[in-house]
Length: 155
Image 1 (cartoon, rainbow, N blue to C red):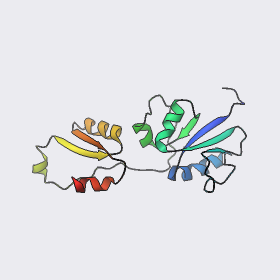
Image 2: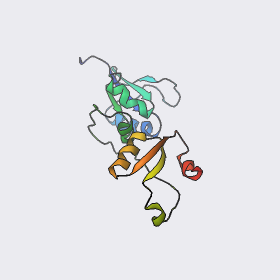
Image 3: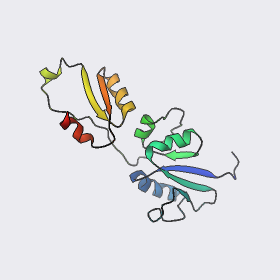
Image 4: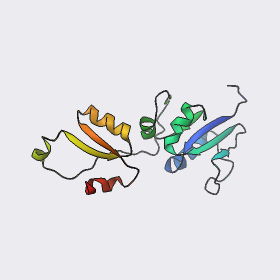
């Protein structure tokens, strides 16, 4: 890479983007147009050879891993779920904190004890698989894309 080569920064849409822009502004990198008014996915910045690419969080690690972006800012959940292997994670920016939770119907401890298999609906298959395997629990994982809170109610 040459010093005059363009630098592409992949950013995650939504809340992470809103919390990332002030951090970039502190180092002089600002979009040269209003992101709320623009529908562009590749946005020039106030620095000539630096541009931003606005992506889904799950795509940021892939763009960086395959060289389509030089650096990226994504949630830790996205790195763990969608291929953080081979990606250097220099620091936690302390933004857009989230928690992954497990929910299910209330069952008495005695009724639950003999049960060795559970069903888990999740959009984070890899994270859930690692979590339950680490606890010695065999989980049948069901991939969902939304309405996670409805899954335990529906069985």
